[in-house]
Length: 326
Ligand SMILES: Cc1cc2nc3c(=O)[nH]c(=O)nc-3n(C[C@H](O)[C@H](O)[C@H](O)COP(=O)(O)OP(=O)(O)OC[C@H]3O[C@@H](n4cnc5c(N)ncnc54)[C@H](O)[C@@H]3O)c2cc1C
Image (cartoon, rainbow, N blue to C red; front, top):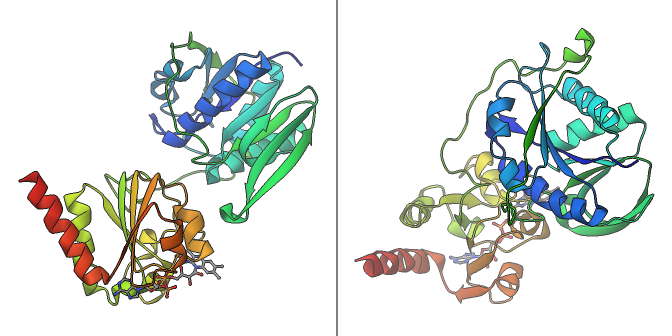
């Protein structure tokens, strides 16, 4: 097998998912070590628009797949498309970001190609038929070393394993149309409607998250956290103890059964730092813990900690931010 490393780039009606740019950044480096071209794949309505930015991230070619059945997201049709393309270009490997969608599509690709699939890789050492990889398991609480032996490799890149970054110099990004042969039976699962729950900055994209746990004490007591988040251009997150108490909606929950966050700063107040919360927070670049307990997990793992009552500390931080801004 001598062909390209194909990277599925997911998009929302033409708007590229940041996660796909992470996968492309990761794959660009992998392709260089393989001595193979890194090529992007965009599928469905809006694919043309999404294709425009991919050269900057190192895509030598951008395969734009179009077909009457490829409108909005459909895992079976997208999987069949990607599998056919992999065979058509004799791809050495097929990759995507390890999001729900990325892993779902790659599962279909692997099944169609009759190859194994390794999900959520954090690092990959390529080497002939066998590649070594470290992958994230159990929601991020376990790192597993694995060896993948396969003709054509199918791998997903763990979300937040790398930061999306443009290539030092843009690649050719030659657009190449691809028309798959799709049977109508592949349209069994299709997006028919969407309800946007949050707009603008979200927990997963915010550069500042102000998190509150059981220590906050009530729904009303989140008001000072909202104020600080607004002052810093961020959003409020919370622990499961908070959602269990009905103080915040589940969409605000950080953790294994909530959202994985990767802000520049995570201010974790009144949160003990249980493993299920930590796995959702550990990709934060910096963590400031505010807690009355100096031995709390979140305190011992944080970059900075304030040992004190969050009800006093949070308003004081907000006031100081405002004072410095004049
Ligand atoms: C299968 C499974 C999945 C789970 N998924 C998640 C998940 O996705 N996200 C998640 O968060 N949890 C999850 N949990 C729950 C998790 O195990 C913890 O129970 C939860 O994270 C605890 O929340 P907490 O830190 O707010 O509460 P606690 O553990 O009770 O900690 C409260 C903290 O607040 C501090 N504190 C109290 N008062 C103050 C004050 N006035 N000022 C400052 N600090 C104060 C205390 O010292 C303590 O450290 C999951 C559990 C299971 C079993």
